[in-house]
Length: 417
Image (cartoon, rainbow, N blue to C red):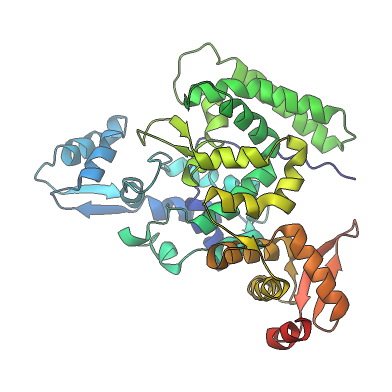
């Protein structure tokens, strides 16, 4: 059986705010593109759009601009922070990052971000690398995004800040982040939760990475791997060496140490695992939600068990929901609705995406738990008893991969109850 190496394929300092992925997902479905530039440039053009403001300026914006370092922001800092009686021009993203409801005010994109941030979407399987086209996971995300959030990338809509992450969106992102970076995340999170103090900074977390990466490479080097995976492990060892070279150097915020760890901290601030007393600094406190996750995730080898059998039960505990398992008819209805929204032109939808979308909706709309493996079992039983209603395709390993629903939900549901 092939070994899945769950380590992010890209990590850079631009990958901080999850909210920008909403734009990338929407843009990839809206236009046909085979170029990275076709996704990246529209993103930075949208968020860097300049808006002219008239004083007096809100206190949250005044506080935010004081954190903008460098001579390029000197005029903005002077005008807004001092509430000068002149009009000031700021970028759209500045207004959203200044929002006190955003748990972290970092992650501002610049002109160079167009060729860097989209790799976050490819690393999480929202976008297909090379063709830069939408994968079904992008459609799954968009089913959880309010249209006003997407409109807020075109004009300033303070009531629909697209950088805010809802519980539903955070649940999907949590699944994606663990599924694609579990080998690093588990070891990093285990080390963080064992710290004697309840807070840590980016430098402390970053200094842990070399040993974590080397330990991960050592584990996988014993497995039978294809050449490309072994080359990838070799590259990771070099990255670990580069990060280690900065351990005893002063903190600058821009070295390989900070770049590699920031993407493993900031997105989790968006979804409530860490909090910050000062939103523009990289100092974090662990939350109860973080502890709930680690209580359910005991070993890196248990990642599949967590994602497929305990994921939604764990998320329910994080949000203090007294959820119970979904009844079969509730599960079937939710799966069919999700499948119809995600289906391709041939009517098929990936089972995992269908199950994720159904599970998220059931949890937050009905306090019901539907795990991924439970979804697969329910679909199998449904297809066996009503083959005229449900069809499958399998992958090259013979596992169920795609599902297609053929009859109206009412007749199928009543037949099964």
